[in-house]
Image (cartoon, rainbow, N blue to C red; front, side, top):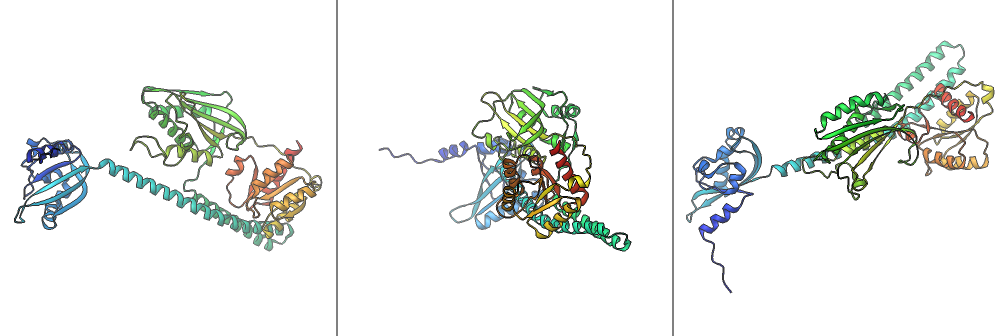
Length: 507
């Protein structure tokens, strides 16, 4: 068996020179460059003839030179044997890179420092990835913090609005009984006004918890599509053709226009990156009527579909495309938040978003946005006509239930009060002659107001349901095509909502 020959100084020099990922070179005791390997040339762009004999401080940025860092680094290596650090360094062309640096003192047999061995590595990409990860973690932490704050303020708002509902209800009833007493009427008006101001404060807390509340307005996409297409064209490459197709008599939608443009831009940018060789991007807008086939949505919507001609999305990752921070792009080209924003926008707009990618047919992202529904013209009915109507009140708060029943009776309705969903279902089974169910959304006992409404819809599809909530957030209600009146509700608002539902039932 042959024993390998020991690596001589010439062989060692070749080994060091073969290393291209690390700049490895020697310094004399004063810091001048003595040797230079191929990795140093690749990272710092200097040829050996240009740099040997020069002081190594030329690799430092001016700010570090002014602080005396090059000299301090050599002194630290001289005293303790090694110096390690990370920081900005400068290439020959003046560009900066983030470096990991190690300086080792080289001593002779008597222990005297005869020079330094210096190793530098360019870790800019690793640093950028680490910073991006930290930023993503911070964004996730902020999102979780805001979600927790939203849940807290939502719970507070619910309880607070229950109290405000009782106060407003009592004030409304007392004002009707006050007669011509001006002093008493002034006091009651002050109570009602204070309660309404409390409701505004609660809504402001909820808006803060959502951080950036949407500001929806009615939008005619037929007119808006032109400016949106112009915006997208500026963000696409010249080898991508943009085509828009808008259905005739397209329904208007009720969304935040700025967030809509941002959502479409995010989808378009993802499509652009999926077509590096160019292609076609098609945006189509059509009226659709849904019956819970898309994420449980029911009612009239406008479907905005963005289709590209790229390679498509692999089926195994298709369910994750709307996840926060999930991306298949190369490092530094995406954070994974673009489609997440689209999903958030759709949900907060009482709509939905879907992704479809048949093999070999590109990808289609479809936004379902709620269409603006016309208000029903309702003729006021005489109290004697409505006195025969019976309303089942479902409210777990005893005080609120009492005032709700009194308000309804003041309107001329007959009422029956129960305090949870189970009692409501039992009452409907025993006494089927109810004309409407008026239920709180948040209740104990396993079923909330939405779940109760679904069960009633299955058992008594003709029975109208009016929901109420202290959260002042009608997103879920609108997505479920249910009617909701926010707490604290006023006499006139509650009466109008009830009249609308009962009139619609009679039509």
